[in-house]
Length: 443
Ligand SMILES: Cc1ncc(C[n+]2csc(CCOP(=O)(O)OP(=O)(O)O)c2C)c(N)n1
Ligand SMILES: [Mg+2]
Image 1 (cartoon, rainbow, N blue to C red):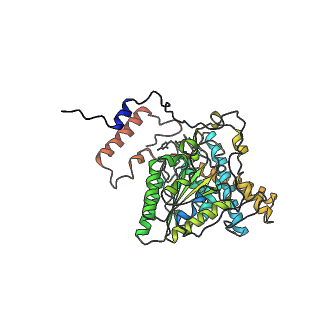
Image 2: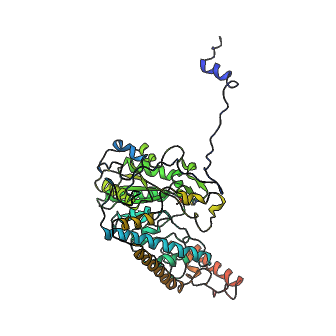
Image 3: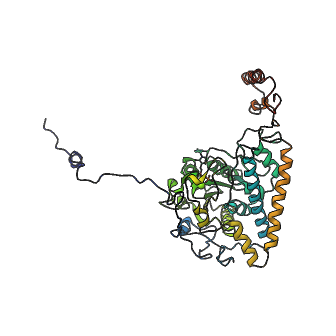
């Protein structure tokens, strides 16, 4: 049988290689490492007020530029500009400032508490307060929040009792979650604040699913989720986007781009290629890129997205462009991997200062009142911390009884868990007949 002549492609394959350039990969590298001088002049900061504000029911195809621009309201003159100005009255602006100041005071005290050994862990949101406080002020109190671990500002804005937050951080006998969650992983059904999960991005499909269920039931409540830019690399985030767009779910996907995911810079999540807002474009989701350190822009964008969801016009993806001013958590030391100058050079300033300066610029605030506000916030946090400490701190033994770790999963404790529980308690008593240090037997 005559042999078939090789196909064109086969011939090429046979002679492949030698004179072709070798392939190579690009491995992202952050611009600045410890000790480097920082120059952020490559970051485009457009004029405040220069961005168009389309109608909330706009077709996502007609707003593509907003995924690459940066929506800004507060200008260098500290005044509000342009169509995104939410035109909030001074009282509301002062309330916003108050929640942000309280969030910062809370972070300061809890951070110190960790350093004093009162808790094992804490996470600050310094510099990102507007992305939670201002955004959540634009939602209704009964809209459902699916947060990451950096939105303590939402609980503060929603009036969640601070003592509950501290009890949880101390895992003490007042902790409603009975010490079962990592400190700062709060949960509050009454405040429509879904349990925080350490497994990154799981909250995003949950938010979309909740929003779909709300629509299926004919309810009027919408869902909003917050996720870090690093976490958008998770498959869960992409599933969430797809479900959201396919079913036109009444959901807001907030991506807080604080430039870092622990020690990995945003380039590893795709920041060198496009914006995080632009991820939504591929899914046909309305997408906004917002100055995350501009409290008025954060409020306006979230309000736009909420109006859109309520009008059944579909989901919105918002990228809040910001900067993580402090370490990832109390377990992290950023001086080992990034330049300390980044924080100082960050071109979008500090959200608390910007709102304060705005209120001063419109004649509705002054430095003395600011000082008083900061002092009162610090005093308040101190007072509540003392109250929470009466319920116990780490290692002082005032936690939920040991046996409770086996409870609350099944309505009735099954025999094998009962057996395990008894064994664990027996072993503990044998090992520590006097009880653990400072603890009694804890059973
Ligand atoms: C699925 C999963 N992978 C990895 C981790 C470990 N981890 C915890 S936080 C974090 C960084 C997340 O960064 P980003 O999403 O940007 O949020 P940010 O901390 O900056 O707010 C990582 C990798 C985890 N908790 N879950
Ligand atoms: Mg991040």
